[in-house]
Length: 226
Image (cartoon, rainbow, N blue to C red; front, side, top):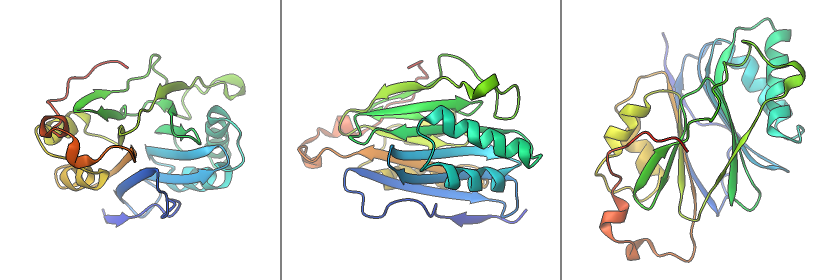
């Protein structure tokens, strides 16, 4: 299988309040990890997943991300695109950061949970209700339930297609000053076909040098429900 590393083309390069680092290595065909980030009138939207219908899902996301008014509507459009193209199902996680970056909405369809990191504490944001991958038992009328998480200044969300346990082990005890540090540490130890995305809400009032070293070292990850 041919492997390549790509940057998601929809990331806004001049964002000053949301620092982003990402990497995606996948088969250049229709299968493999998928990752896209797009600025929309509704806030920054993220899609990460693992799909046989990878190309179909990415095209549908880029077409609908700026039009669908809600996250569940957006995912419903992705499901329609899969069915229309007779593509296979996909495990995915969709996220939407509010315009003021104080909250993030999550919609998880059979995907590994993102990690929430803040003040040296890490936890997995597992969904309250387990939903099947997109294309398997989609609800009538695309009625997907989203969950909202508060995002304090300085908090980081780490999205990845696989290897949550490995991610916690590799981050444990390390000084990580930026999302770029996280991606650099993780991408060398995970499988080739993997997508990683770290997004931090910047805290302009907090000088990183003033944070005690202990608060910049992530402990061994304990998987807890959000």
